[in-house]
Image (tube, rainbow, N blue to C red):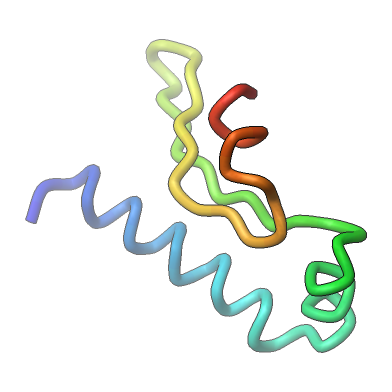
Length: 64
């Protein structure tokens, strides 16, 4: 497994835990009032890459 894959797996797991452990957050996401977005940051290049999202339209996430 490559370091990028480990980081992405960690980001996905963390985003999932937020939904599992916060009933209030899960309800807001389900109602379309908020979203959870997991990003992988590249500090040397100053870029961020979408890893996962919950409650966010996939096209909107790709556009940002």
